[in-house]
Image (cartoon, rainbow, N blue to C red; front, side):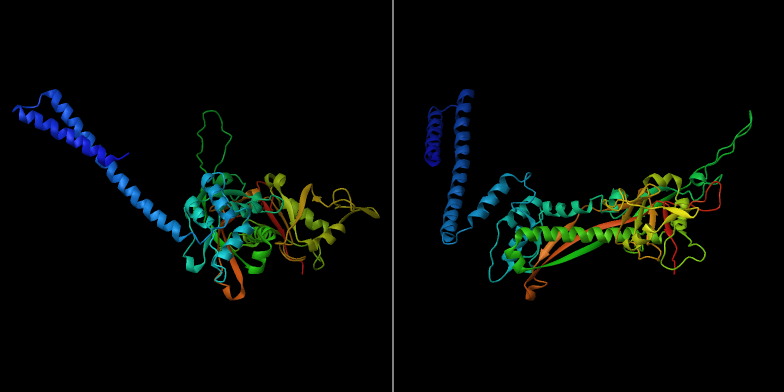
Length: 443
């Protein structure tokens, strides 16, 4: 519609209407004033439409110029299709248009390799969808789509391999998380729950007051980093294999580091491990025991020091060097004996063995045979961990540019420590107990 001509017509009507009233030398009646006001309002509205139409025409002219400039630069059809799909399905497509991590990694390499310089428009979509774009383009940094980050995180939650999955885990939203814990160190009268005590009282006798004590545990997630280099040849020639490689490598290393910290962590810049905790009980070797050996008496002594409340959830963590010793454990009966240990189903079956009906799990973080930590009896339900979200990921080609390699970085934050800060003195008996039991060095 020609809004300019329409407005000119309305203005002409308004002027003629006004001139007629003035020619009669009288004031406007109420109805005439409403009519005149209608002409003015309609003219004002048309003026707004005219200005908008001019703006649209100007933008269209610029768009036509831009399209002509780009006519000789064809965009990859596959990229256009995927970008359109992501824009229409943002909530349903957390991978932001990439099929797998390998394809994303290859896109990063192509975008920042000078001889290729092929920019993938899905990077623009990624910035719009997640609110996190690539870092400075000249530095070669790109944000990894969150779906691929999740794939790395899921690998850490495999209960058959991850020690953290066996702990009591909290998510830390701030810098740290403070937890209240029982301050109990003894089961003796007057010490349970840090000071609660009950009494048998006579009729009308005065009761004696008591109260529990609490302590606080502070969890401050510490940062660990996994840095993975991938050659450009692998990026270009094996995207699917690369996706599996990067995901498995990062997930496995994060899990390995977390497992080792739960067992061996110093507590300084990393979780406090079982072997360095004040609540862990170390059982002494038997008199005259040979170096680098494990005996039936050792196993029995460790079981005796495991707190009764922790026994149902306890497992034996061992170094695989110990396994030949387990097969030699036996109970002497007269002039003969019977085996103490056999894998479930015997030697011909897949070994998922037990001692005192608790599973035996070989892990790499246990020390070698004869050293403290080669065998650990533990209930990790008495260990608390805290994480700050999932895995943060980024990539860059510039660090190893002269080697034709791309660097992928994965950051994970975790902290942990046992709930107890000391072993427990029993109500009756002289030997302390704990949810974490180790065997002293046999040198």
